[in-house]
Length: 236
Image: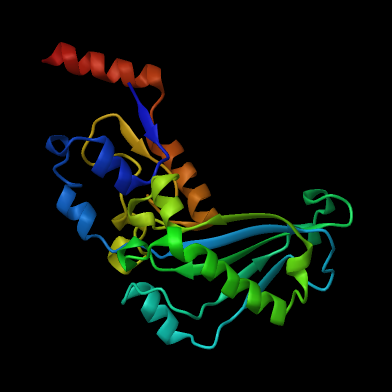
């Protein structure tokens, strides 16, 4: 009676619901939306600890505005990048074996409209990130790496079913934010509800939690839903 999709909204409409059922979120509207950046994330562990590295750290690259243009406007994978370095063991030692550390290095990158072949590009991009980390905050770390896992925009598309491999759904432009994002109650399909980063009000942990609260305010109980539809059936 009631379906809640916490999948990527664009993917839900474009790939799970036939076009004849979508007067609002048509194929054209979905495909013409402007979508957020994607992410390249390298997860790794080390057999030693880097106690000077905090839980959260930003390592900014040599460019700022031009890098953003490459990501959002030109949809071009640049040779340079900025990084967010995450070391959860700084706050919780149980995230790694005793005497070890765990990290991920995250680089914002363009979504799949860049045309990047991540199957062949991922390793060289990881190596470039490793060189920056070795030169700056994690000297000599590669000889201590015990585990390694990469996530690319192609993984966002193939494994997480994110339209264009975008990490955060529609780009948060004025007319694609808050009420202008796909609604929690589907505009097209009776009984379909949306929740998560790609729907109202937006992405990020606070946005996703607010999306859950918004969903809670609009989704009826199954009993109420059946009663409403029974009345509609009788009135017809």
